[in-house]
Amino acid sequence: MAAAAVDSAMEVVPALAEEAAPEAAGLSCLVNLPGEVLEYILCSGSLTAADIGRVSSTCRRLRELCQSSGKVWKEQFRVRWPSLMKHYSPTDYVNWLEEYKVRQKAGLEARKIVASFSKRFFSEHVPCNGFSDIENLEGPEIFFEDELVCILNMEGRKALTWKYYAKKILYYLRQQKILNNLKAFLQQPDDYESYLEGAVYIDQYCNPLSDISLRDIQAQIDSIVELVCKTLRGINSRHPSLAFKAGESSMIMEIELQSQVLDAMNYVLYDQLKFKGNRMDYYNALNLYMHQVLIRRTGIPISMSLLYLTIARQLGVPLEPVNFPSHFLLRWCQGAEGATLDIFDYIYIDAFGKGKQLTVKECEYLIGQHVTAALYGVVNVKKVLQRMVGNLLSLGKREGIDQSYQLLRDSLDLYLAMYPDQVQLLLLQARLYFHLGIWPEKVLDILQHIQTLDPGQHGAVGYLVQHTLEHIERKKEEVGVEVKLRSHEKHRDVCYAIGLIMKHKRYGYNCVIYGWDPTCMMGHEWIRNMNVHSLPHGHHQPFYNVLVEDGSCRYAAQGHAPSQGAGV
Image 1 (cartoon, rainbow, N blue to C red):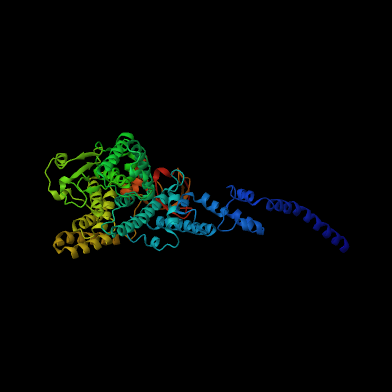
Image 2 (image 1 turned 90 degrees about the vertical axis):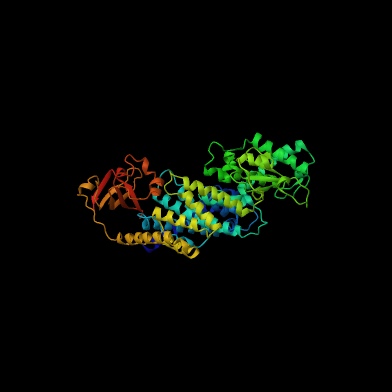
């Protein structure tokens, strides 16, 4: 028996060797392929990061091909997160495996924070200190932002609650970064004249969820400059502006040569590309956003002037901004260099009016009034941005549809970043937050600052302080448990009880009810973002606090709960 057992065991070993032989032979054939072919296979897109990790552990040759800074891990990163590749230079050394790990970790952290927002703030506006967790994140902020964008881009109307809080967090993150960049920009010396850069910061702050960058906007302007050069070549093939290299320019002093540039610009902008002043929809905030001006090819005097100014300076024409009342203009010097000049030594250009060139008298006709010589003077970058933000502020005060007053809030933030001690605007900001019922602690901080700046505002400040403190006390009292009975007549429309297990009609998730309201109790912003008005009964129907099987807390309309399980 023992001999037979030994014989059987000895028979098994060759059998296992025969089974393993094809796999070993296959691996041997694979590693003997040329490196370029192997790399092509590994980058084909059919292998996951886990697959690459396993492949790299099989033998030295494959491990070398899958080195952390090589093409294989770079392709894994690119396929997984394509939008991040624009942040890397082709000449940079990058440890792609490490970048992959850091981005993966940031994604998990982002989802954890979004889920925590769902649990903490489902029944209230996110408080001003609610973002403190985000400010202490480890790793590159751009990775965290990218994950939030991935959540926002999830298919269809899935995970609306996650999208709602991801949008809030992304809005906050980007606006804080942009505001810091703007403040640093404003610290530049007065002779730093990047008007376009300042305008782009304003655009970015008011549209933080849009992909807006100075580089992209400059690239669009460069393409317009190329068209102008093409037209200019037909006017004067030896024009000095044609010799300027991309990103470099110098000023041309001869008036005739400057005039040729402006003629070519007017033809390209207004005849060829059909840019025009937006007279039909003048009071639209889109007219002030540079990326929208380029997309829609229309704007108001100040935005059209900044575009015109930027192109002219790139081609060597030293135009200057003029903060003219009611109608922003540019001026073009006609006097001799070094001479004492007055307002009559300039031609004034109306970029809103197709580049029309005006005299002093025609400028006064344009606005219908006589103005002093001081108003024809040049202004610096900060004054130009002040006027842009002032226009947005005026539009924000007019908005009536958006009850969150987002444009007013954004423009106040921008204005106070430039002029932090403007008492009237600080008071407006405090009143706005008080009206919206948000951030009472911040309201008190603003009011204290106002009182320090101007003790004469004691009456208005005292009134707001008193009512804000009352609001805080009411919120504290509301922390207690509110008893609501479904049996009460006024709650007769509430069909489902606490403890029932339900299934969402549209999204199919299972959940348990742990609270309800006879009508939607969320704010206007939540109702708008969640598109509640599109429901059959809108917000005038019972809404339920539900704990979902994935651990998130949601607020669901009664019309979306068609089926129930057992009570718990």
